[in-house]
Image 1 (cartoon, rainbow, N blue to C red):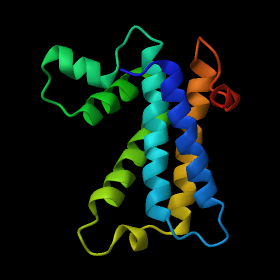
Image 2 (cartoon, rainbow, N blue to C red):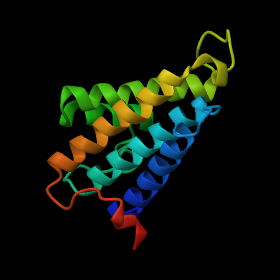
Image 3 (cartoon, rainbow, N blue to C red):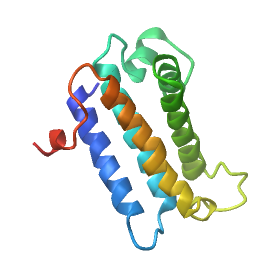
Image 4 (cartoon, rainbow, N blue to C red):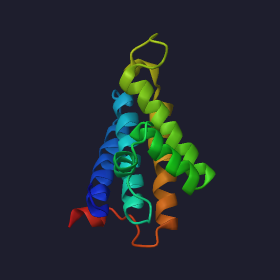
Length: 151
């Protein structure tokens, strides 16, 4: 399993891409903004798990013969061990990314047309920011700083 620093590098890498895509004059890749924002959140969560007595969702599943999906285990850990806002933001990103990746929107329309600019903006500026803020405020180690990944 990747260590905290590697998860943070990937989390910030994904965060930067989400922000760059959402800052474009014409936003064409709303589905990717949402998906990449979710994966940024996932890596922030895994970085946090690696600094606690809890284990990563993957390690937990593998060592306990659990039938739940790794995403469900991770979501449950977030729900149980963070505040309501963070759990809600993580769940929203997860749900939106599932809709984006697997066209889970009743199959009525392709993901890039299903989401509008406000959905993509909310994924980055609300949900992802909520998750980063929570872990910065509650991290007993170092804050999640973008400078950490540039070294």
